[in-house]
Length: 43
Image 1 (spheres, one colour):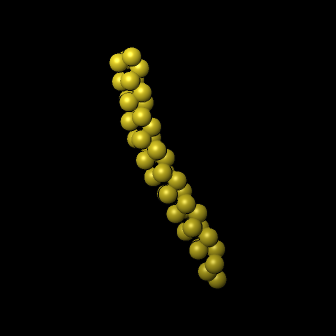
Image 2: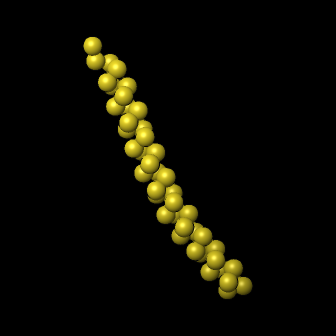
């Protein structure tokens, strides 16, 4: 039971780290798309 609990806790930490990394990458991609959109508005 301790192994399952520790494994679950480790998996939870791993998911938290990956969620932050995925959010960071999504923010960068969104900023790039927003910049490209603003760039197309200039004449």
